[in-house]
Image 1 (cartoon, one colour):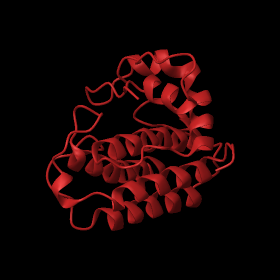
Image 2 (cartoon, helix red, strand yellow; image 1 turned 45 degrees about the vertical axis):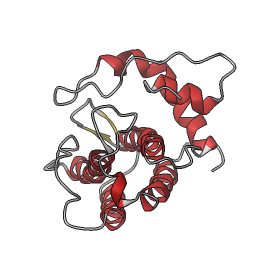
Image 3 (cartoon, one colour; image 1 turned 30 degrees about the vertical axis):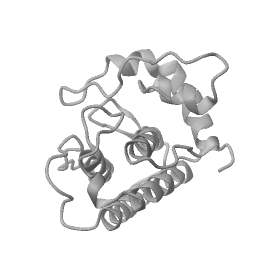
Image 4 (spheres, one colour; image 1 turned 120 degrees about the vertical axis):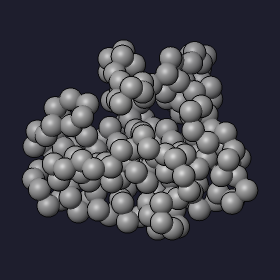
Length: 195
């Protein structure tokens, strides 16, 4: 993906990367640990599926899905199908109810619909890396997407590290990486993971 700032295209690129890793997960890896230390592979997949329902609810003004509820097996079927259906529902909700510049209330803070989608995109992007790492797959992320997300979030990280959502801090302490590290490694370190 070339460097861009279209939130819909960014989210689609992140979703494609997650789909690719999800399709490579073996059934015997569901209980494997991930760099997202609270969640194993199964919980990480559940979170990303539930995050689509959460985002759809935010856009429709009726949040009924808790993205932090990651217990149990895949809810009702094939993870890839559930993820695709969820992403489609998010984009339908996004496209049907106003412009990307429209202000909305979210459980985090008021923001535009486009900024909220970018927030969901960084979450999906870092969890793509988590899933790849936890299942011994290629951890290389879309470099253009990493560049856009990294530069968008560097100025916000101090505030984001203080934020809590349902009693959980979504950002751990930054992991130091050498100044010469790749942008992806700096992004992963910024998100509290050891590259």
